[in-house]
View 1: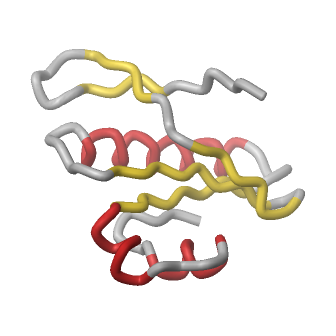
View 2 (view 1 turned 120 degrees about the vertical axis):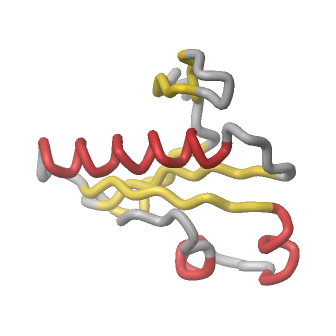
Length: 99
């Protein structure tokens, strides 16, 4: 199912860009994670993640039906730690984690 979820953010050049996160994971009826994966880090990654963090904080403050969090998964640490479950993934990738 296509969600077409996007966030606007200010990119490294100072322009407004659209950011489309990679995955949504519904861990339970009360817990939803937005997952961003990256093989190569560019200058916009921290800006996108900061925007996603703000969105999660805002949506969690505005409603209580479900708690939204996110996790940023980079290829280097994924190859190093090799998580085999989503629970391991969110426990391992804490650099930008919210939720």
